[in-house]
Length: 322
Length: 315
Image (tube, rainbow over all chains, first blue to last red; front, side, top):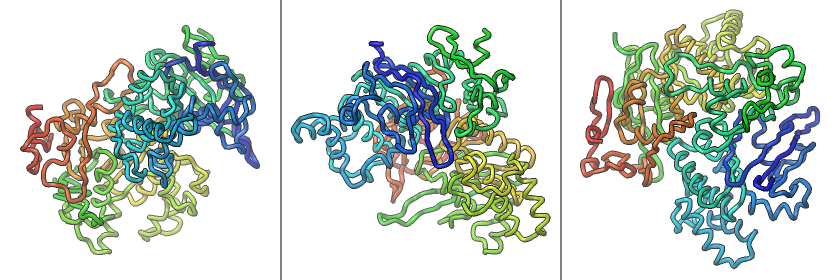
């Protein structure tokens, strides 16, 4: 427990609208060790961003509703603390890099001002000192100090994302939530941003939850991986487990549907069908409609999580039999 | 037999406040029937503009486009309508490229209605068969785009492009907005259609693993210019231009054993507005020298492998 910086237990989040209930996150358990980078992988609508937002308590309420679960940050249940206490953690000890750098910055303030603002909020220091620290942050992410007084529109997409990262790291957070930090960027810029994040992590010892749908990015940066499907973690393990011995049929399907650079086959092997409607999830295993190995049992009862090898968890009946 | 599509020295400049923006600068290539040419490059390199200029959605500034042996560079309105029957486009964003007030069948049948060659009943029948071809169930006939997911919407876009039985389709990032499992379904569909109908594709994308998978030839663009063109496998095994090398090294591989050695590019991107005559990649290139200040010629390094770099032999 002590070495885990974050522990999520049985988190359930729903979105309530006038006529339906969307089951976004269903009984998610996850722990993050100090200094670890964990990848949350899954398709659009799998619930990845909802999990990250639950940790920071920035879900849009309503329609979002946390039905149950606990989130321990350094041993403290942050679901129970007051908003005032939460505000001291948010942006300071836990911070987030948002997906779209084009909209994450305030267009009418200079980038320097926006970084300084985050520092001033959480530290009782003089403005000039905060400004100096903001300048250092900019330099750390590879932006020359003299651009402190420029506005977001004067920066390219990759540079804006670096400003967002500088802002997120300005208070030396213990936990960084990175929500698709490179999805909007070109591969060459993505490579730079990933390298920079790795470098910063090593220097500052930050734990990172990296949300992405790109398995290439995961292979590049993550120590462990949680594969999410329809709001559930269907497979969890170290990067070696997931990439060497993917076990859940969904994980296997994801790997098969990627165009491989080394493959010579003329056809891809997609996963058939679509994600289930989150307002009307299947009763048994959520993946059973698309699973090539599905049996009677899969559509009626929910599989338990099985530890196939130490530290490698799979939620599938096939693994139980073994 | 001559190539289906023959593009010669195509240029498209845009006038901006600061001068002329060279979006597409002197691009030459040919495409045979039933083949695919991939166009890759970073955002802003002019790949979408190239696709649109070839289709005459944008008026070219200079250069010529031949389609099936005919010069279609400056067609009249009537001619253009005929040309468009053979050349279609699939757009990048299946969320904004469909009319939200048109049902699935209305969207798909629209090109047939405009063409005005079939009776209503024939159009209805053809629409149904198009929906079947692209794997849209009949029950979606009267659905509206907002009721469908991205994969299905992109299938509507494909059905629309196929409606007039074209010979050539520009695919502008057709799968970038889709999840991997859906992306694979759409790519397979496009490959099937190519085999059945002998379609030629110009596949514009920034996703390099997809482009290798689907293309026969690949063209690498940098700031409006073609810096390298080669058969797909050869480009990946032996990239010659320093930019191609850096671009390929940046792809994160879904494999934890292969840690690619990345070439990180330094320096600022040259502005495409009134660029200097020399190599445009020079400011970010590790191998830049005096000779790079001269315009770079496209050289055939080996059979069908072209590169525009004066130092490709040494590096």
